[in-house]
Length: 181
Image (cartoon, rainbow, N blue to C red; front, side, top):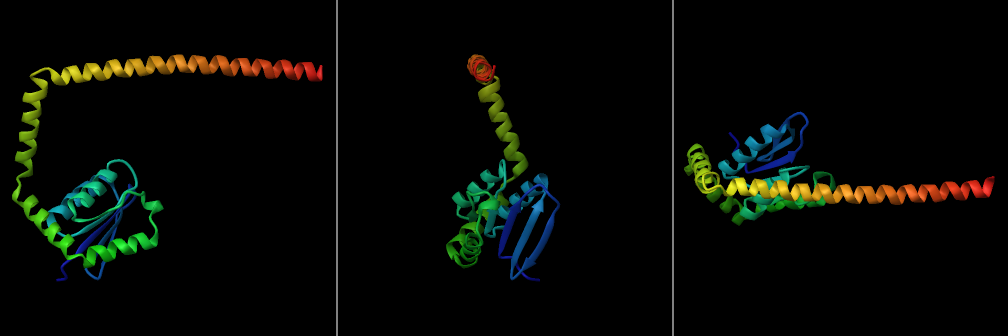
């Protein structure tokens, strides 16, 4: 059995297509839900990963891979990545021993964690520190207040724009009538 040395994730929301060559596993056009699971699996596997984001939280995944040093995470959208960029990423992932070592370290760390316990602990911590103390409710009220202010400012701006546009249209109509009547 061939050990996969790197994962290449081409993130999209189309149908899933996978293939592998020369110890490189490529995953193209997979659904968002599948992609999140696959992304977590690449970290857990401890092999370098290439992430090419298209939208949304895929940029976060790319950022994490890059910052952890476990692969190449592009900042650019897939459609803006050149063949040379991709070639450089594949070469870096295949030939950078420090990246491979870091990926193994992160993989070992992730495999030691109990994900279910960690998420339960985080939810309990959030509940105790934010919900019970009322700070979460205050944050929501602050957010609602800020949103209302923005809506009010936008409504005033929209009214101003309509008045200016209406005035410009009236001037244009009067100019047309004066010229042609």
